[in-house]
Each structure stands twice: as structure tokens, then as C-alpha cells.
Image (tube, rainbow, N blue to C red; front, side, top):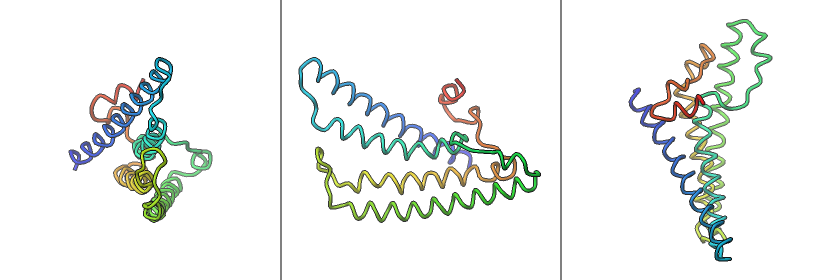
Length: 172
């Protein structure tokens, strides 16, 4: 199971790296062309914007995995250890329920948008809005993989647990 989890995290990580790299190349090329030749790539801003949307949804699960989302712990810190575990279990169940709703709503919305086309690239908006159900499904999977440690010990994955070379960049 650990190999599957590591492969899943690596795939998620590399999808983000490739999206960021492609987006950076597109934006840099467009800016360089605009200032050197007075010509802009007509689709560059649109594609970069949609890549950013996908990066946001694909990266949310990895951020959750390492406890990177904003959390207010004042109530939790004031509770007894057993009450803290119960509250964390309620939070985890609430998150799973929210993720399930967002997967459903996101899928329905993406399907309704399949006939509307983006202005510059003329691709269906459903490809853009598919980031919602995919991103929330990834959030649910990442939460499922860490939920035991989170509920029992308020523990997230550590940077040392990160496979590959991303560990050094997370701890810096």
C-alpha cells in the first residue's frame, strides 16, 4: 500500500510541476514576444489562466496532506485529548461529506458546460470545470490516506515523508 500511496503522491506532484512549467513557458514567451515583436499569442492568457485553475485544484490535496491549509485551533487546544479526537473525527467526516457534495456539484456543472466553448482555444468549458470534481476527488483520497493519523494524533505527513526531491523544498 505504501508504494501505491507514494506513486499517487508522485503522480500528483509531477502533474503540478508540469502544469507550472508549461504555464511559465507560455507566459514568458508571450511577454517576451509582446515586448520584442509587438505581437502576442492570442491564446496564451486564456490557457495560462485555465492551467492555474487546474493547478489550484490538483494542489489542494497535497496541501491538505501536509497540513498546509489555514486552521484555527483555539477550540481544539482548549479541549481534553479525547474530546480533541472526537472533534477531529467530526471534522474529517464533515470534510468527506463536503468533498462528496463538491464532486457531485462539480461534475454536474462541468457536464452542463460541455457545449459552451472557450473564446480563444474553442475547447469546451467542461474540460476547465472538470478540475472541480477531479480536485475534490484528490482531496478526498489524500484525506483518506492521512485520516487515521490526523484523528488519532493530530498528525499530518511530514516533509521527511515526502517521496522524491520535493522534501528539501518543503522544509526550506
